[in-house]
Length: 60
Image (cartoon, rainbow, N blue to C red):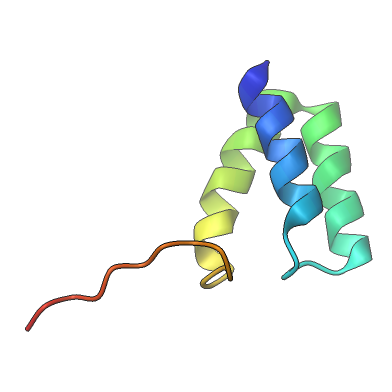
């Protein structure tokens, strides 16, 4: 349950998504919570770097 709440708040605060996309993600998370959570965790990585995320540089 806590992970579903986290994903809802994470979708709401993500500034890379427009309003329509945010609404679809929230619908998916509320309609099918487990599948929506797994899909969000998968898609979140592919959206690109987030402003408040920490990324490590690869050393040569």
